Image 1: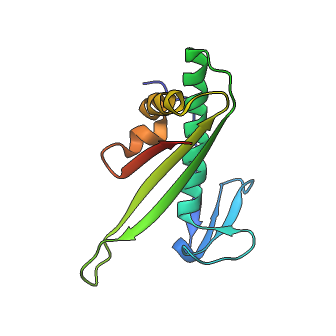
Image 2: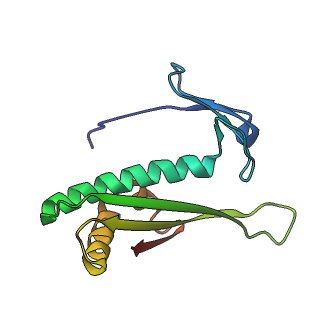
Length: 137
């Protein structure tokens, strides 16, 4: 296997801290889900941002192979669930991917979204680990 890219992020303080790249070209304050502060985010928003960008890139590849030129929009919603029945947390993520491709029917869009789901690195990493639902609009 040939490595094509590596990156690193550093966190201090967990969900009430900060995250930054080693060279500090990227830095964000991290807050628990539901908290709001200008310039801050949470891990679920970061996951949704990365997944949406990665999925749309995979979709661009699939569209090119299929001869579709319409611009695509991908929305990724990440939900956090507490399944615990005890004091010990049992937290799980789920993902909903909603996509639109200009000049494509809902059926064509759904077919291309399903193909992108097969090649997207985020989709492949989450396969069998969390619920991922795909919808076209």
